[in-house]
Image (cartoon, rainbow, N blue to C red; front, top):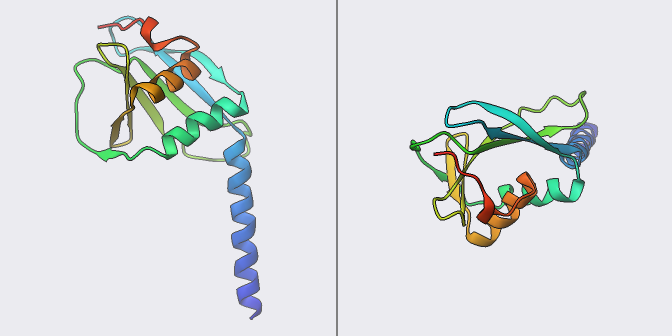
Length: 140
């Protein structure tokens, strides 16, 4: 019985720590420079509401496990990173491509790919870049 209480206690503490680290994140956004596969940090998003909006969108995606190759490097890359340096979390870097019509974005994270619909593409692009997707500068 005591062993069960101990295990339950550990689970509760672990869940609490995960929940806290989930809320204390920032998003580091990298923009491609020129037509090569070189990037620079363009923005760090620390606003909790914006971080949570992007996190919820990513978590709710029905990802497709695919092996694919794009004709050009991603237009942007971004990663969720803990704001607390003591937390050691392995971050997934997401790659983002803007569609030729500048109305949708495709995301790749790990071995997963998904193209967002127009509405969600506009939301996530504006949060990540501060710009409207229709005004995006796509480097071919």
